[in-house]
Length: 317
Image 1 (cartoon, rainbow, N blue to C red):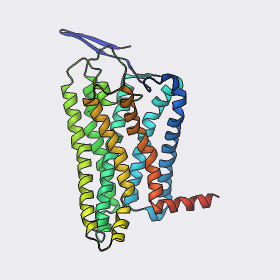
Image 2: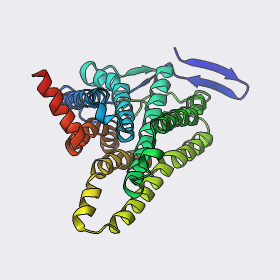
Image 3: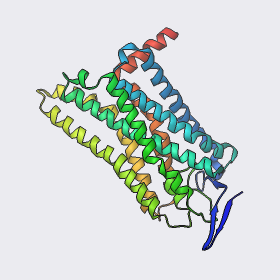
Image 4: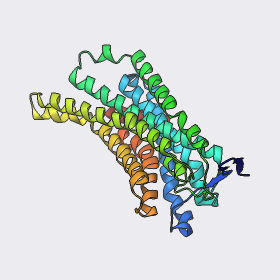
């Protein structure tokens, strides 16, 4: 049941549950739409597990670059697993209801994992910068212990910066409308259902977005500006292309993560007149496409991973 408390100046209303949304206007086709979604989730789960398995079992891949790739795979696995139950629950069984506290928990983990992915992409950009601009100092700068410290710092930064968000939502009183815009819980989506002053929520959300994801993206761009500067100084065109080729997979991962994430944030804050279908498609692109594509990109572009995978398959056969 919904929580209702009376106060001198009114009442505090907190719904017992929210109702999630599938793809607006295409509800009759949800069973068919679930087929490509299942394929994407399967690719995301299998691909990222494969990346983790290959890196763990291949001694030559026990290097900083691949440790960071392991962190990226774990974050992608988490994002896929966070949204899989509610998304397929709607498509298969039309289960739209999610408890208030469960919704806040899902939202918290989605945003934590997104922030972890952003931070790992920044760490990978730093790894590429050191490897290209200071190759002789690379082993001494990015040691195993340094990578562990980076990983712990990323997790602590994500958890602590987002810790107040569920409590800021919990303190709000809500309107009778409880329908969300997505098949998962997203901070701006929940916040906009409140019948209270949400200036603090908006301000805190904006500060966190700019100081974490925003700063990560700026430093990634700066890293690549310095990488390009180093590459231009190389003697031949072939050397330039060979060096830049080591960055292609990371650049693809950055683009497929940041573009839909920034787009979704802008839609929720400024896109009041954008059709719901566009909002939904951008949200799915942000949360499902990167976990599915990242393993494919790195398997294709990384000769070391590709070689280790082929050797593993030969052993199996």
